Image (tube, rainbow, N blue to C red; front, side, top):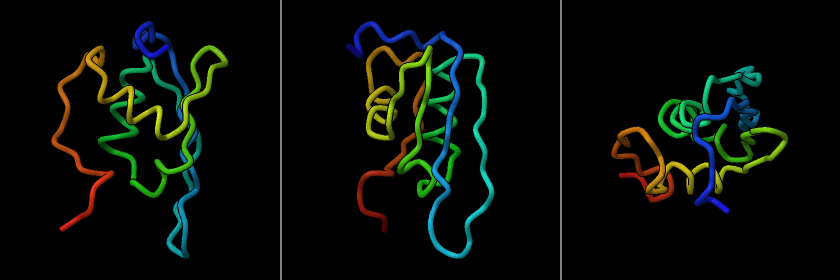
Length: 90
């Protein structure tokens, strides 16, 4: 399943709206490749907006857990930041 994932396919990212009173308007974004969309979702998107986000590629949809899995995969083509979005913060 994830072994044959095409990181070069065009992708759309639909962030969640976040929560609380400080919500910012975020609409979907198109990316030239899934790899760039995944990098944006993990490294730049507010973590509240990643929870519930959907990555769409050729009508296939990936939730926030799948996005994190794709980022952590050996097939991911970019260097990764040292992120800790799933763990506890200091």
